[in-house]
Image (cartoon, rainbow, N blue to C red; front, side, top):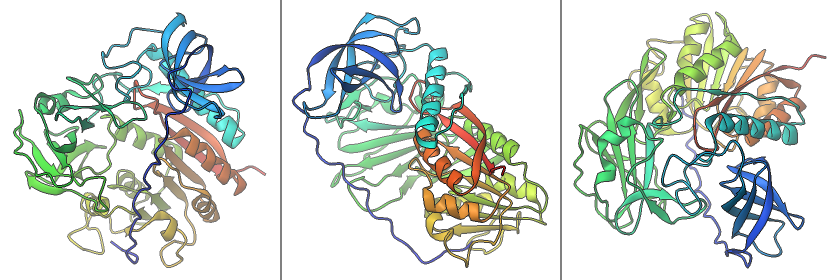
Length: 455
């Protein structure tokens, strides 16, 4: 396991205070247009775009402006009265879904078939706008649209009740249940007690094991409470978002949970990244391998490799005649990946996959460093955070002349921007699959294959 020189991440920028605007509260009657990227539909009012939540294409609604000034080019609004309803409209199954309520779900007022269609239209629209590509996108259903979320972070209101924040707000809506939370989250019983003085409470229910964890983050100056739960659960202390420190502290139990995917058991520490849909790791891994078709002897890169979800099957596919380099910035994720890939403590080489090179560092820095990067790669897996990989990373990957790059994306706009950068570097989008791994919300996961453009 290699580590370039330590690099400290800068603190996340603080969101600027927004004045509500002199149009807030204004009610307007609009004809609702197509879905936009962000869980809303686009309408127009007196030449101005209005991003309307809780509406559906083709409806006529009364929309109440929630953000906007008379000088703004667009407003945000909620549909508070439906004058002409779409055939796709259904009663929201959750009592906390609706204008001014929980901001976690975006499409509960749409039939599930409509949700899939709307998400496909959003992905296609982003590709059209940002990558200049015309492509029909079909979003694939994956399991039940309810009871799927295995990791839920609750906000805490001033009285200590758990809930979720309103859309684009810090205000907390207390809840007694969450329709998309898994049964494993429910059985921990966090919603049944109060958490005064706490900032957030995250409940983690592993898939494939009985491991459960609570990550409790006190407000600045507050002490950890005694935590009793309805089931055996590990308790970790989180770090306030108002500090520059990262990581969690074990209070009791394991500092990690064991997830099961691809027929393997994975260690994921604290609030470390793991797909929240129980089927996602297997679904995504299968799609990645189907697109890439890694072969014995291949040189493979796994960029933004997390705890090693894609690195392990890549290593199995390329075999001892090949090589895999996995790059990840988060230190705890690298430690988990080392464990998951068969590295002994602080060992330079894996006993299971000696041909895997695990590098701790930012992809942007590592991929620009000739001391770490191979001269050539046959296949590349790219699974960046929501902001995407960016031009420099895309161009550098193309310079390695891989026969295939598979891009796993949780944000269609970032995917489309990076597809455009790859096009500039001579790679074209040849295959795309989209999966509904976040039902009821605006989010959609895409797996894209980029190959050298035919000349």
